[in-house]
Image (cartoon, rainbow, N blue to C red; front, side, top):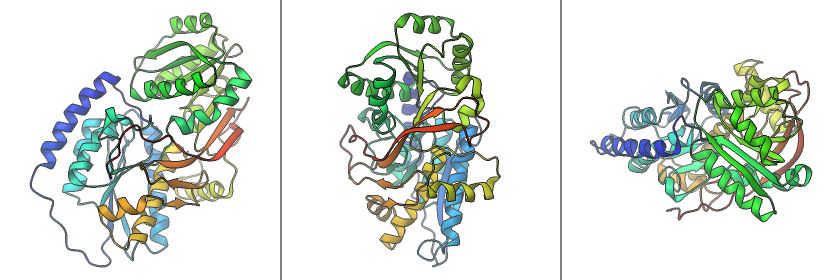
Length: 415
């Protein structure tokens, strides 16, 4: 998701700092190539938020990748070689991502990387993988590829496995506007993902004849929302388009419900899947609309079999989400690409990931697009049920699209 604990302005400064650190570190003596035997493992460095602000996502993030690796190894590995995961903790900090990415590449000598969580983390890793010529498989729903954030995006060494706004939001705007109205009030956390998501959403909103009647970005860890709730009441909005994250989601949503405003407005969020909705509880969350590429409640054979394997390994109460599924798909699709190439190298992975189709993805068929390293994904609009008791009865499907192309990257992607 492209979450970070910094504002957009601070993120840019962080990126400049981490870019300089990355360049300094990678400019050190060349990486030694280890001698290989046929059965030597393919080493993948996985960077997950195991501690810090987004630990709840980190559990599914790393678990999805490990489950896929277990499946691949049980089937004989790749090119007769097992996969070995070297796990690193990002602590949800871009600075730590730079350190860990360099360590994994230089000391652990991994063949490629998977993970990072927020857009700021991915942007911090971008200069490292560019300088070291290593691939990064990025799993999180994000703001799309904008030239401004190169080399965190628009980078031929980074492949995107999560949805961007034209996949997560655009397919469902016509339904939401026809059923609930054309006036949007946008409330989001103050950093890149909400701002760019809203900018892209406004393009489609204008095309469909809608309007934004309010737009506000909230600093992280804001406890009280009286003034924002007053602005929403006075705005004439029909739909609240919600891109708050973390504790601010909980604070706002609880106060929104306590103010009795749920009956007056339709709330549509592109952040609150099973993990977050479980934390909100049924009274606060019921009636909310949520759109993503994956939910645990998707009814298809792929997802049923996937969740059976996931729970058998990690426990019946373990929660999966879109980011963990992105990691799962990334591992399988990378293995398919290397098997097709017949060798393990950055060039082989880069060229052969393009066009790979994974028919067994939990959310439905996923394809890696050739032109800009973005995934073609399903998209689901769900409504939170009244009185839900668990993830099993939390969502009802409103509509879905089984193959949604993202808009092209807003930059020239070097090949």
